Structures are given as structure tokens and as C-alpha cells.
Length: 218
Image 1 (cartoon, rainbow, N blue to C red):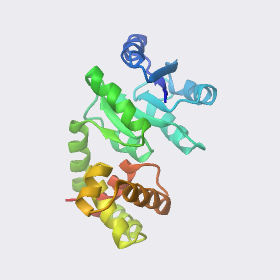
Image 2: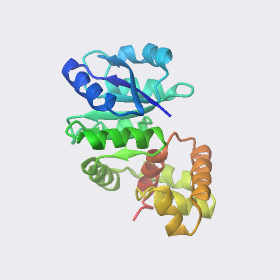
Image 3: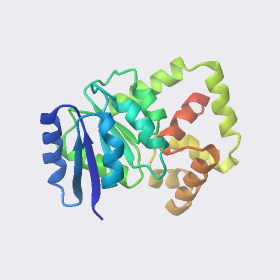
Image 4: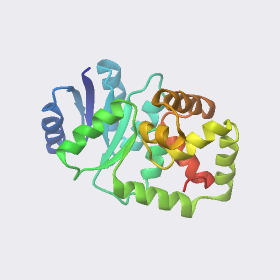
């Protein structure tokens, strides 16, 4: 299956470089390029990409605003935020908006191609640096009210679903979760799907955020 990708970045040289890297993969098709977040909704409607590779800092409509608008729409594409700012305070906002991943622009070409494939297959992807910062921020800087809301959400789940959610919060793959909890990959996928539905979430990254907010990850 061909993965259709829309590239969004205000720097034409960056867009050209990303298109060259991703366009070299047999299973990836670049369906469009946008220089500002305002161009994203009509281009998504026209080209129906599977994945939008989104810059954060753009002059008119920034990538976070565009991501929030996309993820609020019906049947949205997956969004991967790509930026040079690994310490950007807006990482959390991007992930809470429903972005499936957050990568740095210095990522190796092969890793970028692999990340696009993983996101298109429904797996979240975060750079290791961003993951460490995210977990530190959430565990150290969460408010009491947010922790309470997160715990209330997890209380909606069955005991087995909570177990799966906690391991998702540790960044484990479906195969790893299955091995940890002694269940098949198909059963893990079914549990994850029910968790997303019960909690009204878009992806596994948001499950992980709730788990960390609730203090349930270890």
C-alpha cells in the first residue's frame, strides 16, 4: 500500500529535502507541499494524505493550530510534527492536539522513512530526546486537577484495559505488550481500540499522556 504524505514547512529548501528523502521510498508518495498552516485544510481535502509532516513555526497559521484543526475534522490524517526545537514548550500541546509523533529535523533519512511507515500503520513515534523531556514535564509539572482528571478517565477502564494502558504509557509496542501481559497481538490491538473509544482519544500517544498524568507509568 502506498503511503500518501503532505509536507508542510515554510522553508522551500526543507520541503525539497524532505520530498527527496521520502520520495525515494517505493511505498511513499508525496501528494503535495504547503508553506503555511492555512494551506493545509484545502490540500488535505484535495489529496487525502495518510500522513501530514508538519513544521511548527510558520509565519501565518502555525503547525500546532493547523494540527488541532485537522485532528478535529472527520477522518483526519495522522500528523507528525517535525521541528528543529527539541526543547520547544509546545510539544505537549502538539501531542494533546492529536499529533501521532514529534521528530527533530536532524533525524537520519532512513529513520524518517521508518517513522512515516510506523505512523501510517497506527504506531506513535517520538524522538528519544522529546520522549525524555515529555515524561519529565508531565511527571514533574502536572497540576493536581489534571492528575485527578486522568485518574478519573482510567477508572472508566476495566482492570485488563488499565494494565494495557499502563504498558502503552511505557512506550511498548503491541508485540511487547502481548509478551508482557501474556496475550496475543490481536487481543492487544482490541484492548487499545476499546481504550481509545472509551476515553475519546485519537491515538496511543494520548493514552500515554493520560497514564503519565495519572502517575500510573513506571
